[in-house]
Length: 112
Length: 117
View 1 (tube, chains in turn purple, orange):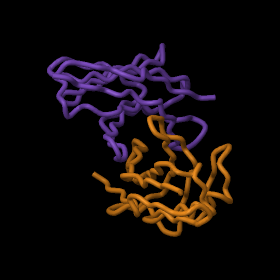
View 2 (cartoon, rainbow over the protein chains, first blue to last red):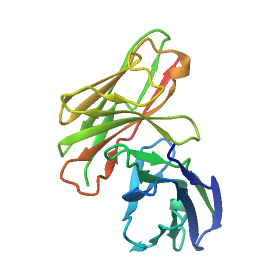
View 3 (spheres, rainbow over the protein chains, first blue to last red):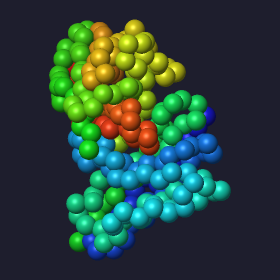
View 4 (cartoon, chains in turn purple, orange):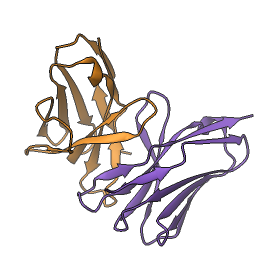
C-alpha cells in the first residue's frame, strides 16, 4: 500500500539548521505537506508544496522536493527551542479524494 | 486561517459506556471531515472520511458499528465510540476541508483524549 516514511528523531543545537527528511511511495501525490504537532495538541500546517514544484521557501522554512526519488525535506533555519515538536510529512493519496497518508513523525529536540 | 474545534478536549469514562466527540468548523463550511486516531508516539491513522449528508467511508479494519460517525451539517461531525473499552483509549483528532480551498488542505482540530477505565 501507499506509505510515507520519516526518520524518527533529530537533535540540533539552537541556532543551527534542522533538516527533516521524508520519502513517499505514491508517485501520483499532488500535494505534500509538513505539519507540526506540539505535546497534547492537534496538527498545525507549516507549509505545503505542489508536486510540480522543486522548492518552496517561507521565512525560516524551505521545502525541497525531488519527485524522481519521491523525497521531500523540510529545512528550518536558525532553529529555536520553540521549534521542538513532532513534524509530520503527509502526502495526498491518489486513491481517495483529499485523503492524506502520514509519516510516523520526526521528533525534533532543540538544545542550547 | 480556518478554525476547527473539538469537544470535549479530554474525557474519562467507564468501560461499556458510549462517548460522543464533536468536531466543528467554526468559520467555514466543510465539505469533508476526517477522523483520525493517534496512539502515543505514533502517527495519525485515518479512521473514516465523512461527507455531509452521506454515510461515512471507513478505512479497512475500523469497525463502523463501534465508531459511529454522523455528519449532519456542513459545520459539524460527531464520532461516537460505542461500548468503549480500555483499548479504545487514544487521542482522536478530526480535520476538515474547506471546499473553496484549492490545495485540499486539511485543517485539524486540537484533538480529544479519551481514557477508558
